[in-house]
Length: 469
Image 1 (cartoon, helix red, strand yellow):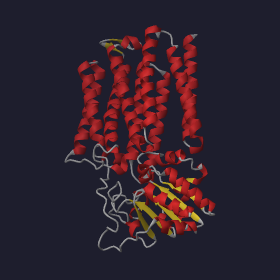
Image 2 (cartoon, rainbow, N blue to C red):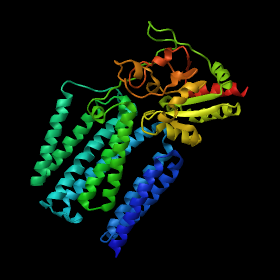
Image 3 (cartoon, rainbow, N blue to C red):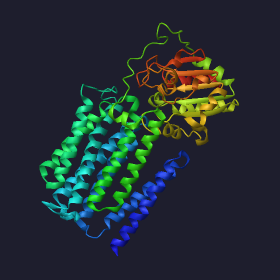
């Protein structure tokens, strides 16, 4: 009876997780989606505690783990800045990967506890599942650590490339496959740990050549890896909910990665094996640029306020610079003032704006920007031609016309927001440095572009002050 109730609870939790994913697909239902996910996880934890055979000792250990993990998670959630969400997500992915490694080790050294055999005589199917979960989990861990370091600025966002890199990765991948086959045939502890060590190395080597411009795809791919690692371990220990949840995360992460790559006109294979992008470099001073280009036009917040006050249609384009400056609240304040002047306000979000999928949507939601004003690239691109003003705040590569015109550019072919079609483009930026992809933005030199040099939050605050006069 208890086993039946546990299975039924897992089924309910699985349905709630599916509803959570559905809710998270839309900003308007994202809070509800989060709630479904939390309730589903709560049910799953209670069902696990009530499973037959848990015993008082097992329940105590689980509760202790919940207390430690819950405390750490609460402290992190209270202290984390919205700009740090991408690296926080990468760090969480690493923990999921390492958890898969630990569970695989527990199943290997205590198989009788999971009903998969005894030490030295584990079922062949379980060894396959165990080795896959181990390998994917280890790759996810080390890859996520590198992604965290790049996103957090602890290492360069530029690709780290050396001669023969792809051949080395291919050779290590082939060796990993051989080790897995040998491990399944022998069940050797030495091979188990060789698989783990080789997988840790592969995760490191797969992520270091990926440039900063591809980081949003990397984050979503690592999310997918963590799901598949969990699903593999779920098969090993016979946990239905872990299988379902892992498959959901793995599949949704893979689909999201495909969407992100489509938004960048990239293939997932290229992202994982190559990568492009470099550090943005030191910011040049206002007015810098190539000698053969027309000089940029630098304006003031007062100029921008005057023009926007007389505009009918304004499209705001947020990017990572807005996140770094934590300017989302003052941007919404500016938008509210412009609405009072009779302007129509919209926000344009590129699929890869920021450093993780949905980064800009989260920031705007934090500032209580109405959901119906926020539009994706496909929905709003045609409206730039009708806009009086495009206010670009911290977005760079996703607005660069070189993606459409320069076949030699690293971002050529990537769909961009057509901000250059607006009558006036205000570009808020600290200097003339290139974007995260290391490509100079042609938009800076367009005759209808006016650069507003300075910190995104301070510049926007000055515009707000001018609008209030």
